[in-house]
Length: 166
Image 1 (cartoon, rainbow, N blue to C red):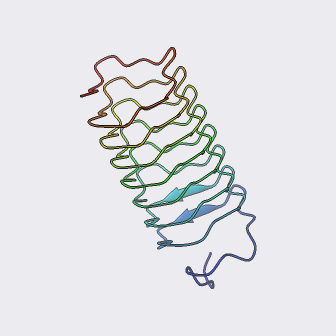
Image 2 (image 1 turned 90 degrees about the vertical axis):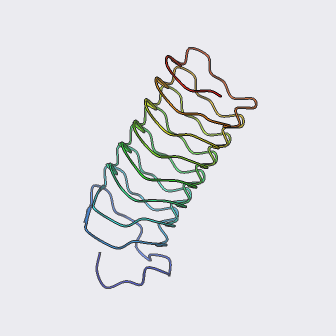
Image 3 (image 1 turned 60 degrees about the horizontal axis):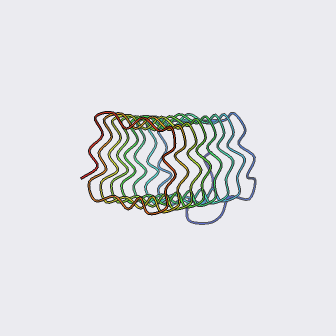
């Protein structure tokens, strides 16, 4: 991934199964990219743009991605454990069976996201926007949802054991 400008859109957006290790991808434009099964290890992804990107089965655990934009991205069965994604935008993202356990999604926007059967145990969702989000069957055990906006969210069959909904 060397030899490109992080501020301009990537010309070749085919990264299926690629590994990104220790790279500064802050504010990088991955919009519409194929990142299925890609792996990110110790990368800086703050402010990166993943709009409409395909990240199914991607591995992004423990990454710093505050203010990253995943609008309409597909993250089916992606590993996002322990990500630091405060203020991230996941509007209309598909997070079906994605693992966001122990993540920091403080002030994140997940409006109209599809998080059916997503793993959100111990996730910090304080002040998050979850308006019209599909959380059907999601695992929210021990999640922190202080002042989160759950207007119109579907929590059918979701496990909210020990979650803080104040």
